[in-house]
Amino acid sequence: MENGTDYQLSTSVNEGIIEIVITGEVTADAVKKLQNEVFAIVKSINARFLIIDVRALKGRFGVTEAYYRVRSYSPDTSSVNTAIVDIEENAAYESFHETTAKNVGRQLEWFTDIDAARTWLKSMQREGSGSARDNG
Image (cartoon, rainbow, N blue to C red; front, side):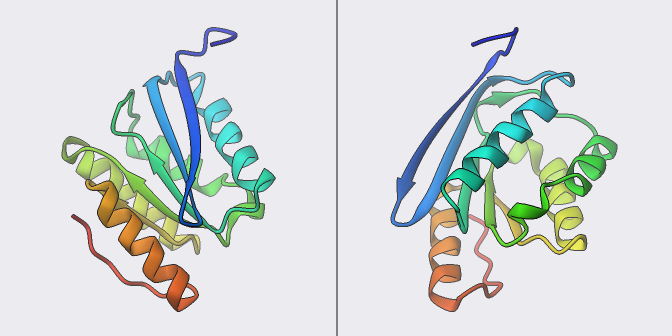
């Protein structure tokens, strides 16, 4: 942790899918930095299929912040098929996040089960970028 950062990122590859697990706590001041770190990872490995697991992350912000954050996503990552894995308690927030992303042309689905997220992304790999949905 540096500069007061209270979150950690770990990255792995599972069958062609980049998986980023974010743990710890994110503050409103650090969320842009976190977003930039995720985009840097995605761009550095030219990811097309991505899981971001935030189940153990503390700190969620309102829908207004999600709306503006989605609209500031890096254009370099517009072709990345993304699955967000979060806990059921955050369903309303993640549902809004998913809808907002789709409204700006992003392929993003949220799940409560990481295996369901992997299944969805594997179907996207096979289909090229269809829109199957299995939210476990």
